[in-house]
Length: 372
Image (tube, rainbow, N blue to C red; front, side, top):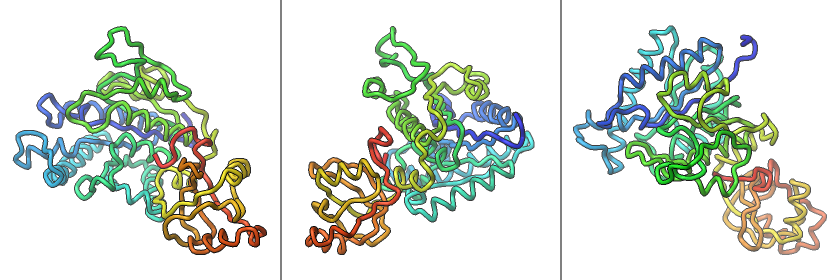
């Protein structure tokens, strides 16, 4: 690989792949994983590592005999575990001559555009300097309404953020099957997926793990987000020798979710709007406006406005829906909610005025739910 065009890889490993049967973090598994990541680094790849396991690493040090179930105990365990994990990773990577850093993120860091860009800039600097950023959700302070849900989703959004070439998701299963292999011994591994169909979603079941938070559905959702950003995704089993090198070389056993780079031309602004922005209101439009908007993907006339919900200022990100309540997409509006209400009241007199919806991202454009 030429050094002037390094490829970027985001690797996500779940808690169940880092813990022992007793539910504690396994030093042996950490060492093996670090060795695999080092192989990628030695080959010239830039690597971001999204690691779960903070709660699993810390709950016994908190005095709990079993994994905690209450939010305060989980957050307290995470506050201990984050330190233990980054200390272990730093030591392991330094023994190979690589420096690791830690980035703890909450959903609100991504929903605010300035903070979103700050995270991207920080990651770019670290990667360009040869550092291995270790990313995790900041479980110590995050409440449910501000959570990504699981690190599968987080890893996909990080992959889009840094324009990664590949997302690798490792767990306790070796890929996506056409049915649950625990229930059906004849289930077949799907080696290549170019489109996530309703049938594929129906085949996605739970992981059965008592340690992690994400099942197969969350991994399918992560693949959707990555594919929408033009990023191929690999799903395979952690602990398999040379799994990371084989995954980037397309020779590993698992499922490859394949897409052409930048086929959707989803730039950073549209990525942020589609998957991360906090919307401030809704614009309900009639069928004629919907047809026009889907065709021209930018503007409607005031006569197309059926209703305006919420209070928002010019430049806010809003949701656009049809009169049946179906979400069409979202984008940046060029008028405030009060101005839009005024324009729609005298719609025919104001039809020389154009209501722009900039950076519009439509559901049909992505073939996946915007806001995932």
